[in-house]
Image (cartoon, rainbow, N blue to C red; front, top):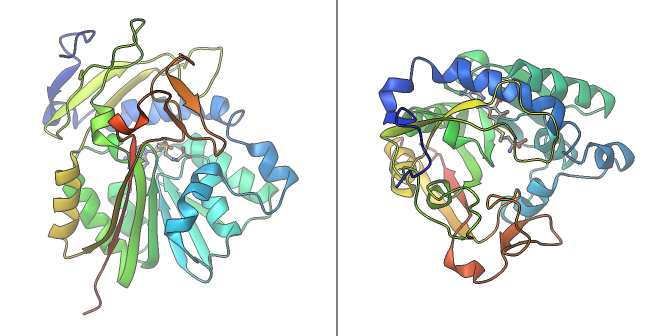
Length: 293
Ligand SMILES: C[S@@+](CC[C@H](N)C(=O)[O-])C[C@H]1O[C@@H](n2cnc3c(N)ncnc32)[C@H](O)[C@@H]1O
């Protein structure tokens, strides 16, 4: 277990809580120049109706979002946020703690004439940063939850951002996938990382999940996995009701490393195991509703 890890990489979650924000913010800022070259930006420019592959995947479950007020937590460079705006949301506000991401998102929205707007800050401060405004939909995911030390605090934030009758929509990495090894030459997939939230993981990875040559200037990250039970319990604990839960055998990035031998890219831009894809859930979609009183 944890075969390739330095002894100090794994520790009780609380050991990392003072330092995770600064480390992760620097890391996400350093990914932005590389992601700007890899996030289908030219398609957004050339086709005013284009929406990101991530949002295209979500659409059948998301349904009609025309006229909704949406907040997109951990919006990164805003490509999914702008996609939601393009689908007819009345307002879409993206929030992210990475200044470089928010800067890029604002530039992109301006260039593309999008009504999406952006706020810089920590997810846990979203309620005050958004002046206690409430929304019809909280949208988030695809590499979001793993950066947050407490899923209970996240669920409380989500619930406080929603109007009664409002909904959470999240598609994110499956916690079982998060606990598995990185690419190994021998093709094996092993359980190397924690599944539950009580341990944090501090590692250094010179490359992001998109192809790029130069190494990241801030390669270190601190992440926290959250088991499915922990996520669902945290949401139910706020009084929200679960209205949808699905597991998928694919992810919109390649989580298994460079080998074409055992990873295939599908036409919708999703990646999955080439052989026996149904042995492993890679992502999940969860929808929850804040009840009306
Ligand atoms: C993988 S991206 C997810 C966004 C989206 N799926 C995408 O790829 O465009 C993760 C985002 O979470 C942000 N993030 C991480 N921790 C955060 C926190 N505590 N508060 C706000 N944003 C955070 C990072 O800056 C990054 O932009």
